[in-house]
Length: 366
Image (tube, rainbow, N blue to C red; front, side, top):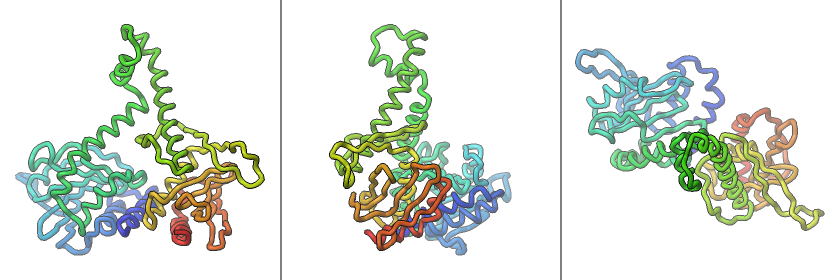
């Protein structure tokens, strides 16, 4: 629980302060050191745990420094190289990590710009850092599947063998997911040909590929919309979804779902439109309150007047309401007497500014 709270708090800090950070040193002070201390649990002021500006002479290269070395039981376990926030991270930025990796006892190296963290090990060749990470963490878009693996790197639970044994699977799953996302966003020729051969019996000419390209894109869009719609219906009815959501579409998606009619409304179905913006707001609130309540208990119901976020699919356990169906957006938070206070917001990021109030509201109904 404390680990998730620290992760969410740092994510909120990056979101709020990232645009004001202009240097690598400021990035380290504002984001990387808190990540080492609050998320991973190492004492940044204890040289037996964290060594800044770690020096390890290699051959003719003397005096080169790695930003941080993390130790446990007197042995270097992790190396961290930092860049300025917003700077893209690639293999070219990791030259010192490559050099230091094979001359120290470290099995994990981290390349980060304070927002994105890329974790490397030596799966491809012993004692030689891989060129591709086995785990990536973006604090502004946390993949919940990466959280348990990140937890294995914390001081209290650090288990290098467990990390390495899971790293291979994580590495290739991550790469496959990114490739799926890329193909869904812009289907390549091989991807297109794969589906044409399964639905078309004729010769695949350039004209045929041209005809099927928009059809494939439309099929992907409709399929992912169906997945979203299935999940929305599941959340409202309490019935398990038959298909898990594996990826989100880059284009806006609206889903039509049915809800129970309110008092005074005829028995015919009330139809509401759940927008992608409302779902993004839901996931932001969910990430904020997840440290104090199990993820499975957090749900939502959409109505014609507001989008409600609640616990246990119970209207008597409201956490907040999103009023996004008007020019001015509002975040509605209910007190202990179920009295709603509406807070105007100009964008979804401002929801993070109400983290404490949302957590308090969740505790009241939990």
